[in-house]
Length: 589
Image (cartoon, rainbow, N blue to C red; front, side, top):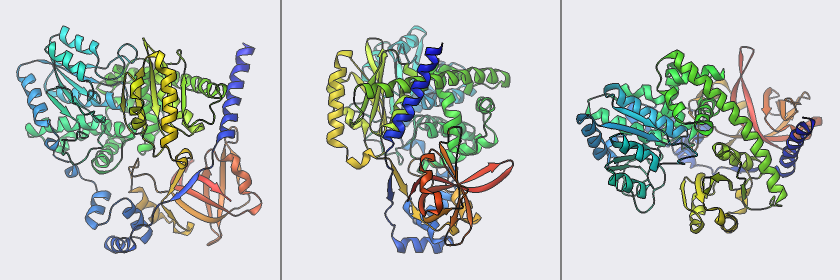
């Protein structure tokens, strides 16, 4: 027992040593100044501060009309779903299935995007039609995406139509197999297509080159939502009747890290209203189990999404679907309690495997590589994606974490800002059996005998392609402002920039010539964080600030030294009192 404890302590010490040793200097990058004439014009049109107008123009909002849409989203802003290629074919086939009393299988991936998509489409269909079944593939037995086992299940149970959500765009051979078995497919996906598309009844994917849909950044659940919206159009339903589904759509948008712009922002905006005011029974049960309030979309990312994901990572994604589609409060509470346990188990595995992966990188003397590629046959497949993200926190570079999956090796890939890991994998395709994903996240499988060759090739591809500056974490600064600009009115307007996410991040500000009032200190159980009371030389007012994981920079603020800060502005509630707080991202002398 003592030896085990010693080993755990040693692992924790090693992780902290790695982080302290490798923690790279942050790269501060000021955004390009927008056109002053456009900023001034917008400032006058909206009657807002020049700085606010500047932030809007940097988000490509240049006119009064665009600003009105940004600040006051409307469900009428949503696009006509029939603008999506093949939507009419998909709707016709579903309507035919209902008329002929066919069983419809709603099939989806086991992550948040897939399980919420299945829940949206299945719960909508089940309102008026009961011959609907849901199917989530087993992460270990079937792997990602459309599976032969799922198709066989459909064929054996006289299911004539499968609606595949958040997957299927590359499942050419599997769709052919289904067709020979008399099973039709409708694919509703958002992953990047290959040159050839599967021969399905319909392939709904806004990223298709021949699709003229006005917005191509929908998540898988978003495409599923457009499908039910189209079905509703044919039934004469108004768009307001679809708002109850938007809590799930907003959760998928948050979890899948898609841009929070255009249609996604509208869906997330109204989805957050549903989550805050009247979420479905299952989401309400999850929030209660987590015992944390959901105020904004960041809370969704760190509270709701990991728990939904945990079901597919540790057990089966069908548990998440059952929860999200449940109307009975007591049953939902039971499901949420089970999922909370899966989430706790996931956290323990995540920490353990991360420690092992960090040790492996050092053991192999790969600290200075351009990539992190690690493998252990015993690692849990359900958490390797999280581990890949954890490794990037320490070694900031494109990362793949492999484990054994049947006769193959399976990996989750994660990338750093600005580098397309999907394209890099395309350059290594000769060693890969199959892969799919996005610019910053992907999954792949390969034969064990190809692992060493793939690893070498991937390292070389990244080394040749990645600009050196992308190997340093970047803080993208929106504007330099004096702290005196931070008034209650200024912050009220900033809050209306939300919901935040990729392409619409919280504005990051730079302020220079700051000083601590002498009471700045390290906080947290191990002194990892920095609590500062900042005095601005300009107005001599004091501003509360917190710097998470910046404890090691205390020496920069001691003894009245002048320093610069990059930060976002937030609210902090303590003992019932709410105040504005600076959340410092980095400090420089």
